[in-house]
Amino acid sequence: MHVLINFFIFSKFKTLPCLPYFFSLNVFISLFISNGLLGKFFIFINISNSMSPSISRNDLVIVQKMDLSQYSVGDIISFTSNRFEQNGVITHRIDSIENGQFITKGDNNELPDSKHIIPIQIKGSVNAIIPYLGFLTNSVNSMIGKVLFLIIPMVIIIITELKNIQNYGTG
View: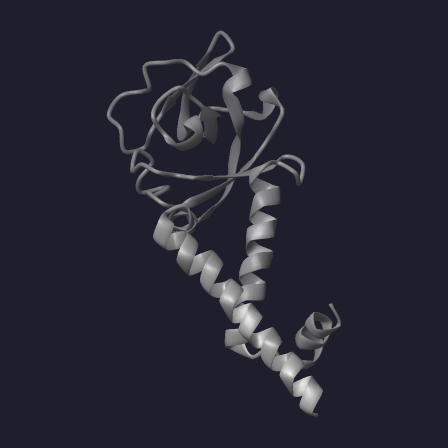
């Protein structure tokens, strides 16, 4: 722990050795947000072009849960669905509201969605969009991604720490 604290405080943030630490912090924060552990915020990856050009495929969508009375026509919402999308979450714009149900439509779709959305399905309203960051997140779930984003940073951390220990012992 002492080596880690010294590394962050006194290393002047040299780029290569810091990358694994920043990546680990990013993963930690992402897990908290995506699981809703920071309150009303969730993160989803848009996996289709149905909202293009507003939201593209592989954009990271940050969603904020709101009271039902705050949703209105034109808002972009994320909601659960039994469709094939990842985690069953779709992000579309509210086209109309009828009898307490929401009719949604992708900006790139000609017709509204055939199934109406009931309030319990709504995850929240889109608060922010981070272009293409979802590609990185999806890549981590592949075997090559796991090697690149988990094992390689772990090896870099181990090598860096071994060098620090070796230098501490000789100096």
